[in-house]
Length: 344
Image (cartoon, rainbow, N blue to C red):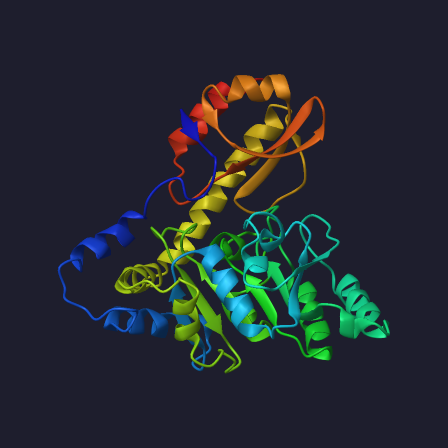
């Protein structure tokens, strides 16, 4: 069995695991106050070209989204997100559990538009009854999106302009940020994201780390006593060294970007094979997530040898499935899949 089920099917990148082993017996203070965490934060600031950035490490993406959103919103506010956004669909109501509503916005290929966002906010404030409604207090987007698509620099700038107009922060979920940045279709850089967004996170779990995400506040806007909020919400790791050491490794000698580039190369090979064999794409994704429309009979046959992710049902006879590549995808995996796939 080979697996393209997700981008965190393997443990940690060997260089990350090596650093964890090398530092394993060091006696270090807890809760992210060790020198590896500080060292990693400084490396991240340099990569962002943002020396004033405030960086903190959390253990996972859902915890990060729940903590960041709930600690930045007032009690009467919710977060605006695409109806296909991770916080809208695949986080088991984690945001709502904190007492904040996710306010769904129409999307196209996983992306919201500045025009739709502006219309939503304009409509909200033109309603005489808005005091009886959940206020839009933040905008959430993903890069790449849940469908592997990318916002352009212009699209991100336009969304940020709407956020500034209504004085609400723009939050970018970067669970797969490394794969988005290294796509040939990307025209955004890490410094661009730091400049445009108010808060974002650099995903580690899906990009070579065993676990961990790096939250970045770029406008001196980290909520007061943020670590207290993290702990209150059950998301503070006592052995904070684990995230610090991993991000220190990821941001040494460009490893984070090397990992992203490898996954993109593997995804491009997948796309070539799918096209040559006549498979039908659900949409065009320039990143490590590829979505195909398969006949249910073909999916049943394929799953005997290949693990993929079920995504949605476009009709009763077909299923949209996702193939994801990562740092751990090998040439042998690609070749084996090519042998298994049949001409359509």
